[in-house]
Image (cartoon, rainbow, N blue to C red; front, side, top):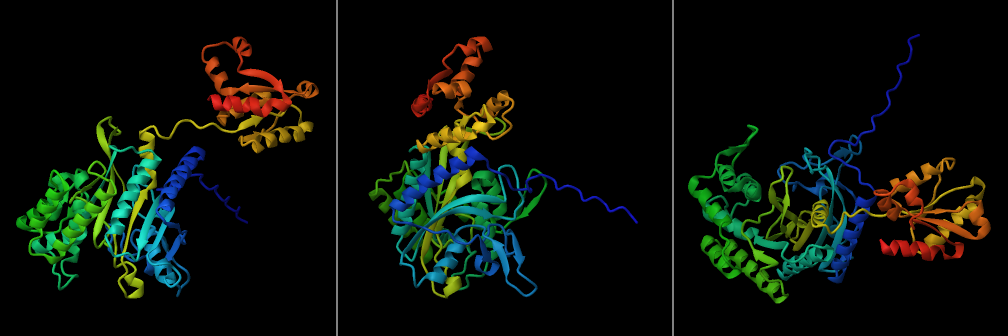
Length: 497
């Protein structure tokens, strides 16, 4: 009988394109999202937690750079004849389904915010993962651009609340109707046949959205025959003539010294397009509303280069860009870039109901914003772990648990060492690995005298950098205190750090 082949052990590796998050990272994200949620809540928005799984049909085909719904998503079929299901790729498409499903029970307008992971089955790269967090706020059922202006103002307040000061960010707004008007003037949009030139318009949108990365020459190439990158890969362009391409390029260069001048230039570019003129008027109204709320040009501007890649936007679109400089991997200074984007999508709910439902919203890239806060030094300082209660006598575990419980009830993180207590040095090594600020020691002698030893590990580490072990023993990094004064002694150390 052949010997059965031994089953190999599974590899302990994170799947490609995914990552694990540990203690401090999770806490930093949680605190940031809670701060943003408080801002949204003040504006009257309600929390919504929708399913992470949707039908492929419900998600639709609105992922950037893909044409079919089964591209870019993680999807599977329930059984041979069942529905195709997929992990959500953003938080907006599920909102459209939720609103359509529960619209008779929800208020109109419906204002909601949502936070959670989304999944995209795309090629991963440096800093680009297949699972990432988003933080959204949307208003469904409000046709007025006052809703768009409110979203922009709320976004600015959220950024300042989490630690991005004025002067380090700008909220930029544009209108897809204006761009559509420009494309109508350029001859790549026919108002009587929306599907005509749809493929070319998609390439134009994605090309403009890459302006920061590719520059004007790269965008112009994509508007024409196409572009070959440094690796030799060729991306087919929209096939516009030089005259058509120049009209689009003029649109991207339409920003002037202030809002009124930009509006005037946009009006020139969309002359002859009713849709374009309507879009310019909406932008002008948004700018007036932002100014009335106190959001001047240092925080909000009209910028024609903002287009957003997703195909479902129908009107105003906006982005939050961080303007401070960081150093790239080669040590070169560059601006941090965009951390949030959104816009109006009046046709998304219509897919379910057959009736147009106005909607607008914003999505914050959580990981990007966290990286920005670290770059600004707002977060990322080494966080303390729990106070560690060491174990000197296995038979007195109840005493040690009582000490930890007393500290916890006083609001202090604490744990009892639950490894092998035989080697006391290992207990202190454990406390160091946990970045514990304090270790508590209570042997039989301390117990009999009603005292405990308190070891200030943070101060001890500082002293140990310059002192010998014998010198360290005489320092105040370890001291004795009455058992009933333990909480006060520990709190004094923590507040001094």
